[in-house]
Length: 565
Image 1 (cartoon, rainbow, N blue to C red):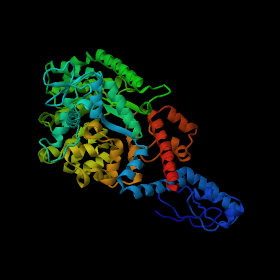
Image 2: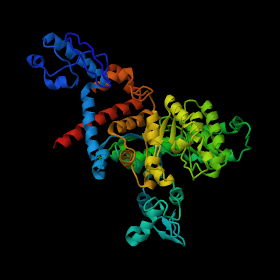
Image 3: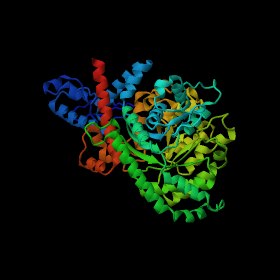
Image 4: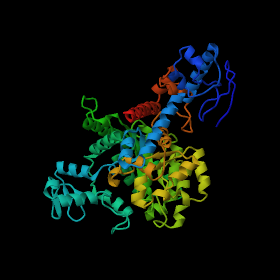
């Protein structure tokens, strides 16, 4: 957008660049007047604005003052210029996989909001732990088993050196490695979900699994993770709910006999989680001189219900999730629902599950929802099952939608997208997962549709260990397959923190793009004033966002420095 305005003391026209504040009515040119008063061209160039004329010292002084206002208002043209140069650098390497990988590996990425504990770990991690624990592996299914090793099982101890072929086959069985879509006995969907039954159910290694996930996040320049994981008490309350007489016609009537059991279960869950976190910190050596990089990653848990179980059990698990999030928001972030959405029980009970969420959200209004919805494709289910899942999840109160792949099949998809934009409902995009499970990628993926509609988008990993991916790879696919540019990637990274359930006020307005008044000038200058410091001190989310902006500056400065070498 361009506009002209008269500059005070200059009497000249000003050419505006997109994003600049109109509060500045003056621009600066490289003219003799600036040289006469000893103002460096570099200082003036930081405004990246131009005015013709203004050869008097008073005109220059007035102009410089107004340029300072513009610098504070728009992040200072230098920031825009730096970003544009880095964007050009990324564009130059976009066609070269290794170069693009190196660039994106170093890029700060904000948050991973869709990360399943267990699925985030690589098969090699599970095999190493089985080796250390003297565990066993089933010969036929490659399932990990506890000791002692009976008939049909082999010891995990020393397996890699003893039988490299079987070790390799086990890695394949525990992941999507070497899986070829359309050229296997099982579909990508079935291969993916079958891996979870082979990991084993030992809770003893849960701290190791979380520690490994946090270290990988740190290597990917992710600063905050929401881990989809349940306390053991979730299954217990679900079991108790399943044993009660179930009232299908009045969901609220099922609450009373369960709520009396909540306090003890919630306290037990909090104690277990505190012990779990302490063990994670110990494994990462947090607070020590040789602390792991994983210590720098903040994380919270997202408890869930399993949508494939009987309705009373699902209800009990949901209730436990709501209760523990409300009781301990420092450790628990929000509630989710998981398991294959195409499962016959999940399809049959979908609207019942959404009714449960509505009921419980009314009872626990401070507990946020992020719901798996629309992780479906044509052929996997009939067209009738593609028409309403995302819409119903939004209606149930979801603040984020996990996957949202079938948006194009929703009734009045355009209207739903407008609703998501208006209500600031973000979508968690999992590119590799959608490819390996559903076979949806490239031009078949709805990511551009969400972006074009203005729906907030975040990139996430889902089950990076099973998929043999990581967050950097998700960003790389976003560039090579979806055509995202650097500016869009930066906004996606910002969105990860903005639409996270981290506590506290955001640095950004509801649109996720405009700085809040308290920190607008501070974000531009890079130094927090008293008003902004007060916001930062009272908000973990704002502190994470502030650090991300500093990390962007450092990253871009480093990229430009390396390009000059």
